[in-house]
Length: 83
Image 1 (cartoon, rainbow, N blue to C red):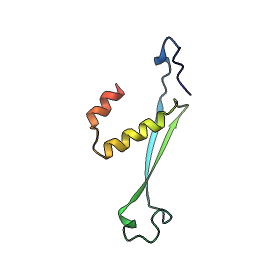
Image 2 (cartoon, rainbow, N blue to C red; image 1 turned 135 degrees about the vertical axis):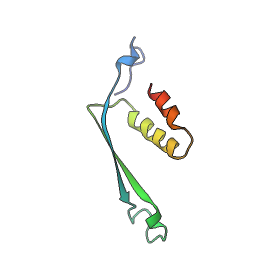
Image 3 (cartoon, helix red, strand yellow; image 1 turned 45 degrees about the horizontal axis):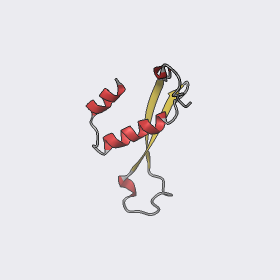
């Protein structure tokens, strides 16, 4: 769903994520075929459940996770964003 910028109360577009599950899986051979480094990598599979999502909500969430993993932002900055 996209937010209607003409709407008088854009905060009325609140969506709740009910559950986030992270599964770690071995890296598929298709990505790094016969690589000696294959065992050093893990594939992360995020399962995100909600009744509905805002436009780009999951893309923004995943970019936040990546930025945290790359130490570009801190846990405190994420908490502040969520407030």
